[in-house]
Image (cartoon, rainbow, N blue to C red; front, side, top):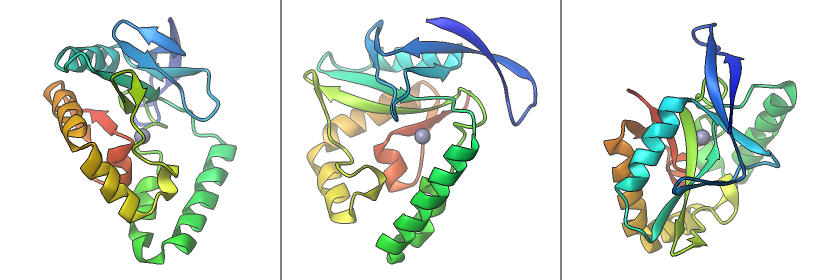
Length: 179
Ligand SMILES: [Zn+2]
């Protein structure tokens, strides 16, 4: 774990972030997505996440997968391509593309994180085809893991996180710290 300084696109000022590498941190697990080696988040978001973990039964473990990510040209391009593919694949869900392929705060500061779940030490497969998971599989995953999802969301909300309203983002457990 180390402290990193980065600029915040909203406030245009320097804010300290914590860099967490792959592995265990206290009772939570850190598993960065997209070939990344670490997750960046604010100390207050990390504290709230750890506090949420204490509200959960031992069989449920929170896995931190994403935090602050600087917006790069490659990231912008991949989001644009993803949005196009999603719209072509799911024309009836085109309105969702904006929410799914937006940085959703990850590009601003370390108070916006994605979390996944391990149940009895096994990762829960909530989006088998990532953001391109069809709606019927999303509904199946929501149904199969309703109890664990409800517990995790409730614990995160108790510690000040707001879960994204989009169904796909909600299964990535994208949450924003609001206090
Ligand atoms: Zn997210």
